Structure formats: structure tokens, C-alpha cells
Length: 458
Image 1 (spheres, rainbow, N blue to C red):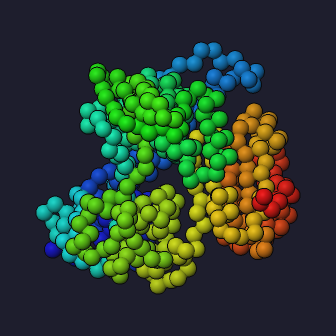
Image 2: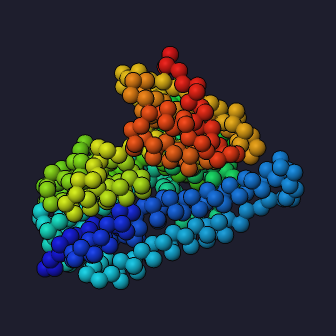
Image 3: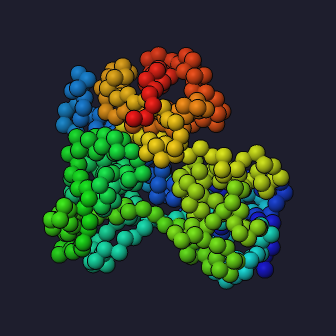
């Protein structure tokens, strides 16, 4: 039986930042990976999807050339080239990470899926290995909603979609949240007809109603069909590329026929594949491994980082989980989960950047809240770029004067939000932020000025 200081299960994005530190500290490490190296981000998430989004935006802007006095002629899509580009990006990143890890001194890579055989023992195929410390970084997967008829149709999830060789003539998407919306816009811009079916009364149920409404307007302006409050009842497929989706909306039975079906109804953790009972590791009612402030499970020598712990489900939170684990493991208390300010982005175009509380969360908090809202169309730089869709919303605690949150749906929103995220860690008054002198002409330079519009929530 091989014995190691640390067994690292899965190779999500925390791997690349923590394992080299373990090696530098003189630790022996076993890395266990049964799938593709790099986790969801590299293989099925950020890297390939944002590459496709970039191709889709290039097509969109080419079609808009005349708006800027640029005559481009007829636009056509080489879908094979689009997919070749994203495959090159993700395969290169995955293979590069695998080769890098395999080439490290004092690292042993086990190619296979891990299951616990005891509190300190992990089985990988025919191998049993023992670790003083074990870190679970095994991620999650697409949630498959049990729709009647699902077993009889050729459905896609976010991973299968990336293996398409031909552009779908009509892509039907069940689910109107972040993943579904990004794919919806990208494939519409590449030339697919797109229909979104969402059970909730608004898109992106976690977001404020005005943000969701503005997002819906952006997507519908690009001829994406959206059905809200629509419950899928069953699926049927009579022929290849002929999928019937039967749903109920406003009490009426409806049907849409597409050539391809994407299920984008959330994600679930891979905890059910690890035989956690053998190690005594607890999960919550949704299957996420429960961790404390330093990523420690109820078994003190076992830690869980990344999507599998349900504390973020983003690449940047996975990386931060790893940083928190490393600080604790290395004898420091510099970081803690409770200190993290939640921030993320949705990469439609224009993107949504979010940090801290939403308006509805701020209202529910009972705090005295000040809020300022400005449409993007009132920001000069957005008008100059002719990208006027969206809005900016900023929330402040009236007593402490600290930022509570911000939402930027508009050009550059995914980058600009980081100004607020960074500042929120300082816990300084928004009045200091207001004094900042920022570069002109930018969208970001207006953020301090918007604070002049702060008013108590009605």
C-alpha cells in the first residue's frame, strides 16, 4: 500500500495553486484523477464556453458593422473552426496540466476514480493508498431532471454540447439560468434558432427582477424565444434531429419542436461517487460535503474544496478554497471561508458582474440600505461603443457606509465589478471610493459618480 502525506482527489482549479506548495514544503502527494485533468472549468466550463462566446461575439459585431460605418458583406459561420478553436483551448489546457503534474517530483498520479475504503484509505482501481491528509476536489456534474421521455431522446448537457460537429438548426434549452443563457446567446449568434423554457417566473431566479428583465430584453432583442413559468411535461423524438418538448404555460398545453435539446437545470456534486460513508464524511441534504471555515469536513484530516462543498461553485471560489486550506495546513489563519465576499459573473454579452448582496437580499437583511441605479444608456462610454443595454446598481449600508453589493449588467461589467469586490475587503466607507479619480473615458470612471444618486430603499 502506498503511503503519502496528502492524497488529492480530483484536479479542479485548486490543484494547480496548492500542490506545488505542498511539494515545496517537502510533502509526498498522490493525485487521483479518473477523468480529464483540470476539472469542469478547463474541460466543460470557462475555457471552452468563453472561447465559443468570443467567436459568437465576433460574428455579432461583424453583423453590426454597418452601425459603425463598416461594411463587412455577408457573414457566414465556419462551425467546425469554432469548435476546433475551443477544443484546442481546452484539450491543450487539460493535457498541459496533466503533463505538468506527472512531471513533478514527489508526486504520484493515479489514473482512476477514487472511493474511500476507510478514514485514511482510498481505493483507485486495484490500488489502495493511504494518506495522512486527504483533500477532496472532485467537483460536480450537470443535474439531469427526470422528465418523462428523457431516455428516449438525444439530449445534451454542457459537456455533450461541446462535442457537437454541426451547428444545431434549432436548439431548445430547458433552464433559464447562467449556463443556459450563455449557450443560448452564443448559439443564436452562430446561427441557431434558440428557444429557452424556464419554469420560474423570471430568468436567473437568484437575481433581482430588474436585472432579470433587462437580461430578457437583451436576449429577445437577438430573436431568442423565451417561455417563462413553463413546466416541461414530457419529451418525444420521432426522428433524428426532431425533438418535441411538451410544456404547460399559464394553464395552456404547448409544444416546441427542435433539432437539439440542452438540459441546463443546475448541477450536483460528485460526492455520491466517493463512498464517503467509509470515511465518515458528512454531506448535507443536497449532497454537498459540509465544511467549516477552513475547508475541513467533520473528519478533521479530510478537507473538501471546490464545487463539491457547495460554497461557491465557481473557479475563483475553488481556487480560494485551496488558498484557505493551504493557510490552515501551513499553520496560518490568514484566510477563512466566512471572510469571503461572494462575487461572480454571467458571460452573456453584455455580461453581468455581481458582488455581495442583491437588492432583494439587502431588503431582507433588515439593514438601513441606500441604493443607486443608473441605466447603461446614460453612461457616455457605453454610448460611444453603442453598447447601451443594461444597468448599474449599487447598495450601501447607511450606518456603516460600507458597500453591501453591486450589480453591473452592461459593457465591461465582468471586469468592472472587481473594483467593488476589492474595495469591499477593505471595509472602508463608500465616501472614500467616491473620491477616487479614474481614467477617462471609461465605463468604470462613472462608478464613483453614481454614488451621488444613493437614496434609501422605498
